[in-house]
Image (tube, rainbow, N blue to C red; front, side):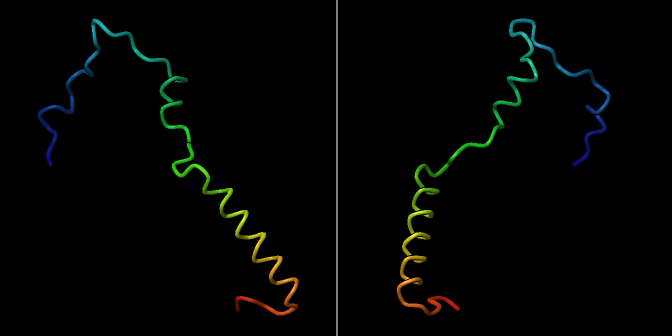
Length: 62
């Protein structure tokens, strides 16, 4: 793609909508938990595997 025809044009500024403050723009891209409950499920499975490992006294996964 070649943008030579628009590269030097001024950036559009809306006359009806005020510019959003940077702090609000940054909030749009803040991390979020896409899979709610996933971390808890991982912790539970880790605890189960560790308990099983302790009772067997030998490695489960190698």
